[in-house]
Image (cartoon, rainbow, N blue to C red; front, side, top):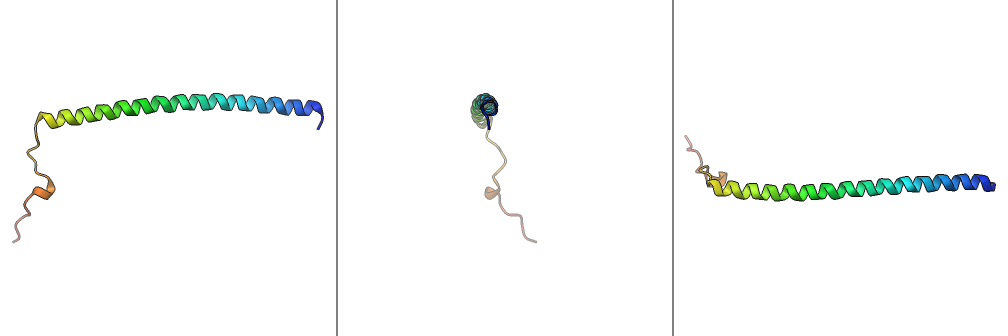
Length: 72
């Protein structure tokens, strides 16, 4: 390999690394935004669950509290 070929290969590798660095930064930003969205949704879910429990207790018994059906 001569000096020109090595220089071309080096430039190609540097270009690839630059694109990969940019892609990694973009993906990292996206993951960060999604993590924040998930936390926000989790907090909203907890708040809704709390509000639902405060509205009115359910008059439907849990399955384990139900009496078994009569046997004929």
